[in-house]
Amino acid sequence: MAAPSTSKAEKAYIQASLQASPPLRADGRTLLDFRTILLETGVAPLANGSARLNIGKATQEGGGGTEVLAATKLEVEDVETGDGVDGGRLVCSVTCSPSAYPHMSSIALDELQYDLTTILNQTLSHPSLHPKNLSILPGKKSWLLSLDLVVLADAGNVFDALFMAARAALWDTKVPRTRAIQYQTRRSGYASKNTDAMEVEGESNITSGFDTRDMARAAADFELPDYWDEGEVLDGRDRWPVCVTLNLLPPVHFLDATLPEEASTTIKLLLAFSFPSNTQSSLQAMRLTGSGEVVLAQMKLLMADGERYAREVFHALELKLRDEDIRRNVKARDKFTVR
Amino acid sequence: MSSRVEILNDGGYRSDGRRQYELRDVNIDLSQQGTADGCCTISHGLTQVLVTVFGPREAKMRSQTLHDRAVINVEMSVLPFSTGERRRRARADRRILELAATIKSTFEPVVQTTLYPRSQIDIFVQVLQQDGGLLHACINATTLALISAGIPMSDFVCAVSGGVHATSPLLDLTMLEENDLPHMTVAVMPRTSKVTLVALETRLHVDRFAEIFSLAGEAGQALHREMRRAVRGRTGRLVGVMETGMKQPIGGEPLERDVVMDDRMDF
Image (cartoon, rainbow over all chains, first blue to last red; front, side, top):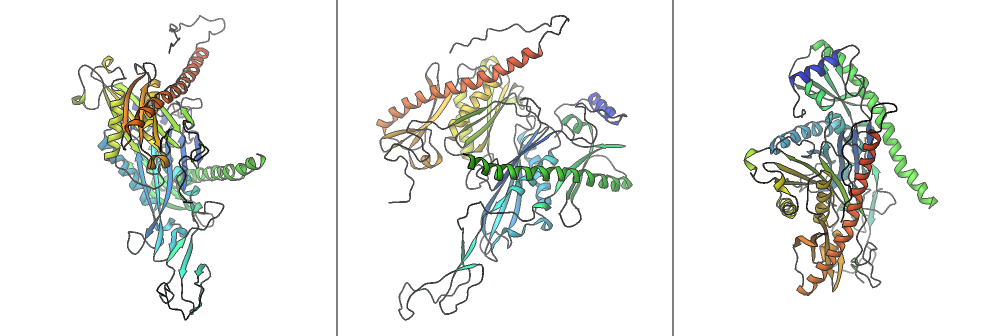
């Protein structure tokens, strides 16, 4: 993942300037500053929820920065015969565009993709984060929520970008409303509250080959009622975690590393925190990657720091997502009425 | 009355409100993507393709180079959420390999590969959304990406798809039309009116072929104007920025600047 060629001297130079006091970074940020993050939701019209995120795009047309595209798609799965799970399931996959890693061979790219997928999937499909409204018919049908992330360009700090994009896409996801259909005999006269009973009218003494009223069945299928919006939001919107990557260069650590900085730090600590609105924050994932060692006593401090940074990222992201919601719904509606 | 969508109604309109020979909205974005040498995002209606070009550069594998010209390497990937139904396609999918090979053979005669012996030009195609006309979107995007990478080519390559409904030819088909009609993709070089690609996967009556073929040639010219305008717009902007950067500081020494090349393009 490192820049294709960073010489020893260059690495030493970057390390020394990061450890200097005051610390210096090539783009003038302090150790805990992030680059500019750009986010847009609803970018893929064929997906149920989508987001495009860019960290560190140059202000002019210049481009650059880490760019991630995330989208969710819902599919119906059969629990009895297919490989569905009662209550639905979430599957993540990460694809890396070869243009993001132009110096990598396709085998190395596959490995990287696999690594990223594992981390995302293990964190996001954990039962503690599972959304409650992915079930259609209990024991029969459920939604498969597949979250696909694509790294279009990598300019460092790809993990934070992936988690943020994943959170934005999941936040944007709308689950279509479903209504259970039940075929029932006339005599039983029972209809549960939220199932739509389809009763066949007619005389009961007529026996016809087409009369299937005696075949009593429970909710057999579902339909998609027509409604003005695309469905209800995915449950547990506020639980999806955000990740901060602490790049450790004892005695300091810094956030949002660029590619040369990533190449010159040996050890990275990934911390994914979730901040549910009613309860305390929880640590959803932690990874220590790279070679090197960390003093155990320092870990605790790093985690406390990480939580603080993650909370800031979380709040900023939450604000932006709400803003996007308003932009796409309220403002679009206003624009429409003006026309 | 069937519930099927009418491909071409009595008023001469298609399902998306276009006339027979009307092309969809073309949107060209040539802004920089990551570390690529050239890139282009093009959208024909709802079909959207991103192409990035790297090179000419040293090949990853030495054994694949040729001693007298550059090798063009095309890799294509389709995003899993680009279609209505989610489908994961491996990079070695037959269909994708075929499309990539088609793109490669389209550009081999146009790119002046003999200028860069023992090197490689990488073309990475990402399909972001598809709604018919995938191949022609890929080819148009690749042309623009190669141009923005500054790779010498003998001409633009402008591709467009055409089909026939009953006896009336249509241009730039959507997914819905593509599923029902015989269709083909034609790539033309507008300056010389040469054709570098004709791809026909369905059966088409011989009498209709010539008609669509000449229509596609004309549509290629129209696309060429659009593409040239995008390239000129971007180049003009870059030159403008360069000039403001080169402005002579007040009272200082005049900066040495590049020799202005003859920027007149006679197409």
